[in-house]
Length: 111
Length: 111
Image 1 (cartoon, rainbow over the protein chains, first blue to last red):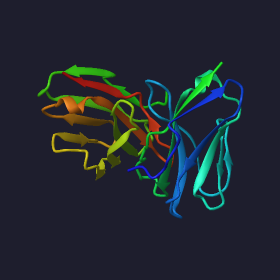
Image 2: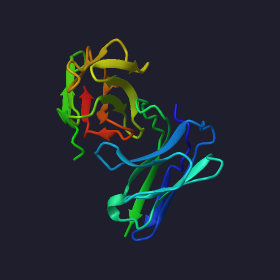
Image 3: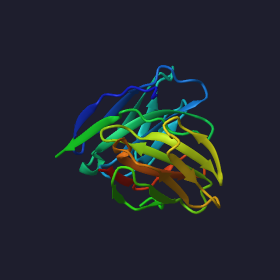
């Protein structure tokens, strides 16, 4: 079962920042926080992952609290193409570990 | 397009028939995963290969399901004696490091 909790849905205005929260209060010291998203009718797409430091790439920023019990994915300038289901996942450090998806957050970016 | 391909994209079958799906991962990826996704839910892990060895299987993978990766390249997932409850999207993913790349999925409908 998924060990993370996320809001079921969120709206965001086009061009504004989308901030997607995730609680992972039972995360262990050897688990990363991963974010994937799934656009309608496509397979999931990797966005970003982190251990305890904040991370940024060309898609998004990941802010992890100091106690690692929660994190926020930030899409700095949301576009209509960012409308998708966003999944936050705790995953062990072994690269062979599977991903355990929860229900995710359905983000709707509106014009 | 992530470079992971799946065939067929859609399959409609009658209850009791056998079906087989194929996944072609990114060529240098040694890890391959199968997931199943039902409507409105996140993907659920089914099984994992490292090269040709099947290292992990979910309890979701009943004895009607079998997966192979004979030469450590492409993989097949077979479902025997299909049931209506098998209707789902079957997703394949491959990886070499931490990031899993997903294919577009095969949507199975069992009538």
